[in-house]
Length: 112
Length: 113
Image (cartoon, rainbow over all chains, first blue to last red):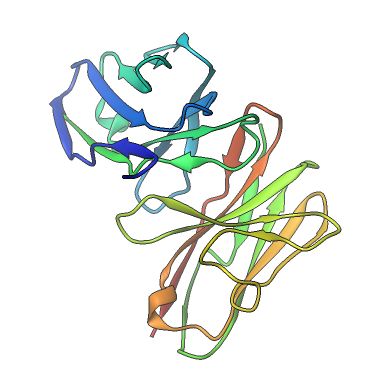
């Protein structure tokens, strides 16, 4: 079993839809949780990070962490075709600046 | 944040040769890392590049195959040695700007024939 599980998709939604992307993990030591967006042929771009449990909002993006369930989510409101990319969750133990463990990535397609 | 550049952006190499990838950060950072991303896959950590000491390699990666240098707080290189087609991949460097965040370069796309 992988430490971090993520549905690979592809997830196809119409423009304007609310998108929910999720990861589950097994290591209870993880405390820092990040979401990266990766466009084709580009490096991962940091979207959101959260520490421990709770919610964090930034514009159309909301990151949610439920440590009791070992489950994290990224919600995208009013999705746009420009949101079409692969979304990677990543997590770390005592220090987010240290080694990250990545999920496999979910490919999202937002259709106009 | 940090702006990270990598050179070359892509290369096509012959089996048995070596390629050195450069990573430059626009500010001093404590931690730098090298990852590999095979087509359609997620990122796998190769090693942590330590300034002033030997790199720390993850299981399955060895110094003879992937020698790493980190001469200062803004620069690192990764060499892929004695390449085979199985080394065809995207190689990414990243840097930790603070305890909270890690940023990535654009990647180097390597094809080995």
